[in-house]
Image 1 (cartoon, one colour):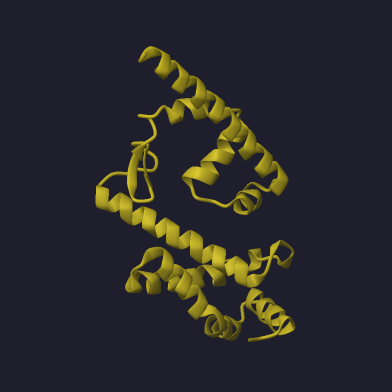
Image 2 (image 1 turned 180 degrees about the vertical axis):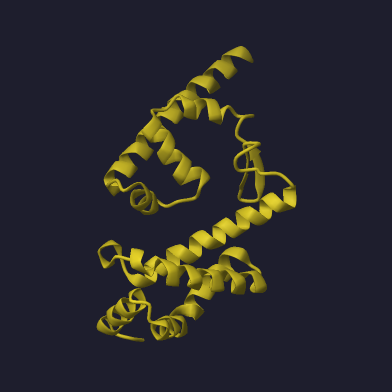
Length: 187
C-alpha cells in the first residue's frame, strides 16, 4: 500500500486533472470500493456499473475533497456508499411503478414497506422545530450518518447529535401519549 505522502501527491495530481493519478487511484482502491458497493447492492453487474459511475464522480468532484474533513479513502467510500444507496432506491421506485420517496410517503425499511402516514409520523414530525425536522429527514429518511449531515448542512457534529436527540425525545413523548390514550380508549 502507498504511504501517506504518496497518496497526498496522487490526490493533488488528481485535483490538477492528471488522468494517470486517477488510474493509479483506481488500481489502488477499486477492489475495496467494489467490495463495499457489491455488499450494498448484491448484484455484480450493477456493482460494476456503480463503481464506474463513482470513479467518474471522484474525477469530477476531486476539487471538493479536503484532507481536513477526513481521509481520501473515506471520502471515496462515502461517494460509493451514497451512490449505491441512491441506485437501490431508484430501482425500488422503478419496481413499484411509483415514486415512493416523495409522492406517496411509502418507504422501504429493511425490505418492509411502511406508509408513514398510517402511523401518524408525518404529523408528529411537523410538530417538531424546523431544524429538528431537517435532521430527522436526513438521518432517517435519506439514510445519512450524523457526520454526513454535519458535512451536508455545514453545521457542527455536536449540533446534529443534539438536534437528533431532542427530536427523538419529543417523538418518544408524543408516542407515549398516543399509546396511553389508545390503552385508555380500549379498556
